[in-house]
Length: 79
Image 1 (tube, helix red, strand yellow):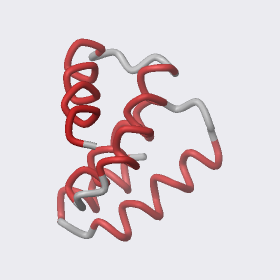
Image 2: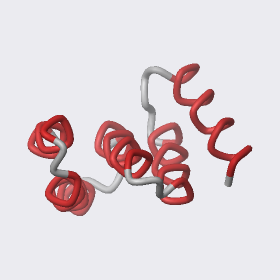
Image 3: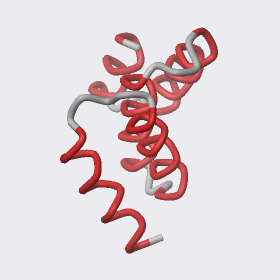
Image 4: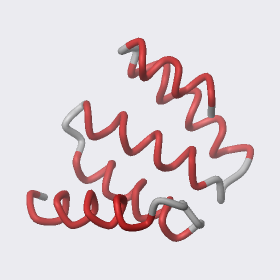
């Protein structure tokens, strides 16, 4: 998850996706990995994918629920 976040901060979104998908493959209920992947997808204007990731993050216990619910609401309104 950390490698994915680092790549996202560098702007290397494709590598970030790869790292985050691997993290999810290792732990399919990792809320931070889903959240970070959603951030990357949102930056790539892939709203449907970002929405799915944010919903998974929320389902699996992401701690900043109010913030994440706001992002989900925004994405639903534009998707």
